[in-house]
Amino acid sequence: MTFSPELTFNDGNTIPQLGYGVWQVEDDVAEKVVVQAFEAGFRHIDTAKIYGNEAGVGRAIQRSGLTADEIFITTKLWNADQGYESTLEAFEASMERLGIETLDLYLIHWQQPKQDKYVDTWKALIELQKRGRVRSIGVSNFTTEGLQRIIDETGVVPAINQVELHPFFNQAELRAFNASKGILTQAWSPLGQGGELLEHATIADIAAKHNASPAQVVIAWHLALGNVVIPKSVTESRIRENYAALEVTLDGSDIEAIDGLDRTAEGAGRIGPDPAVSDFA
Ligand code: NAD
Image (cartoon, rainbow, N blue to C red):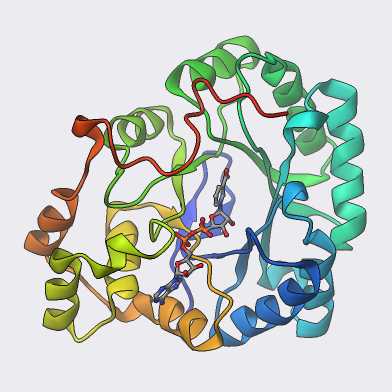
């Protein structure tokens, strides 16, 4: 079986570049589809406390028979749990549900600038890493200002920043900032949540050229850009199809054409909340 390439964090640990996300997947369904994802070849699973399926992911890990060093598990600290002590507690509750000894990656789910607890929350993640409870620590939905502030106030640079990123919203500026700090960029909603993006003529033409599917072309674009990418599907054939995107290699003109789909300049493209202003604890 072909396995995903690994990217190296600034702390020396590695992450499989292609992973599998389980947002909006019921707990019992998560158990089934994560087992299917493991069977397809995925070894990296992205969950979060707020998804309500950490226990299902944990049961899938048990059922898979895979060992801790064969898999990579990410979960995220929810907004309502931000703050130093509450983060330490929320982490242990997540670990209980996942049923694993050590977590591979723990993320602050949203910066929540109005709540303004993210520096203390980041300090708790640093402590969890020092205690050996988590191998790597990072953030999600952080702006350049938020990143700079936690780096300045703690001296610890996040391993990764997981943000909305797809061809309609390609985050060129934030990707460049992340790279300049040694922070990997991880793409959420990498397929633009399906729909319009996967039906776009540019994607369809490139897919036909490579005898690949539209989803595979978009995943291959992320891989070529150096993004960590976590497409979601609960359909077994699509889970396998998405994993097989590892076999698709785009050329420079394909990548340029997909880069050209970005709608940021028109103030469009973003699907989810803007982390600079979102406040939904
Ligand atoms: P996505 O971009 O991965 O799109 C998923 C949808 O695309 C599916 O529901 C399906 O409708 C369609 N799809 C998937 N594979 C397909 C295929 N091969 N052919 C045709 N259609 C296909 O959307 P997502 O679930 O929003 O994002 C992926 C993961 O990112 C999530 O599961 C979660 O782990 C993570 N995420 C994180 C945050 C965050 O705030 N950190 C927010 C959203 C998502």
